[in-house]
Length: 239
Image (tube, rainbow, N blue to C red; front, side):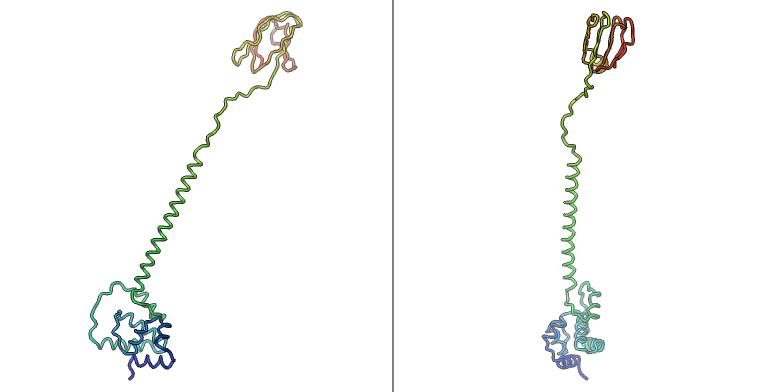
């Protein structure tokens, strides 16, 4: 009955493939393949990986992988009892995938992948945090600028002047008239008017007019006639 190594070597040579070509295709180290064909399974790897490599090599050579792995288990059990060693955490998902796909996964690969993933994860997280901080700073700066009221020009206390009006007083007979500006109490006119005499006064706002004889006075504002509300002595307001 042929040994495991003899069957492997015979199948490889039948396909006309060198150890080097087989190693490049299966991604299994050439010295491992040489040891398999020499029936030497004393490799410094966990048995799980040895079985995975053997299964991949059997698939590649179109041999029955289950039969070869079963023979390998017999060889390993017939030898010296395996010394129990603690290899730490083994990624069985990776090993199972190795057996099913036929791809070789070197020992320690999962640990390296985890280290790389952790490294890139930390770098990515730091980059995201930096971007968030920058965005927050920009928002704060813009909101501060928008919230700060622009320095407006000092408000000018401008009193919207009323449209210019002219009060014209005409005496139809002798009388005396006093005109006081209600806005500030300024006396605009205080004198007697002879018959036919006319006096023009610039009007701004409400006026308080005191007349000696109201019936002897005629008023016009910008050419529009305003009747005097009293006939004798008295005081009235003109808006």
